[in-house]
Image (tube, rainbow, N blue to C red):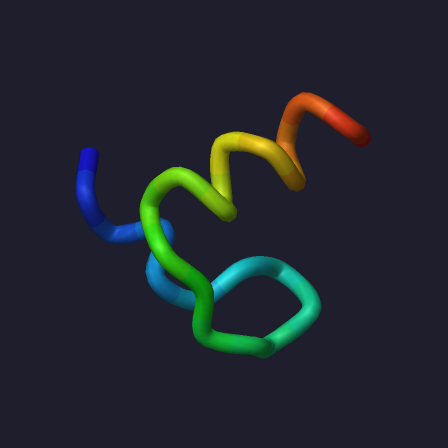
Length: 25
């Protein structure tokens, strides 16, 4: 699952960043 480069917001972030954003939500 390395296709989280683009979050639902529309910005490009790293794999770790995406995981953090998901946890915050």
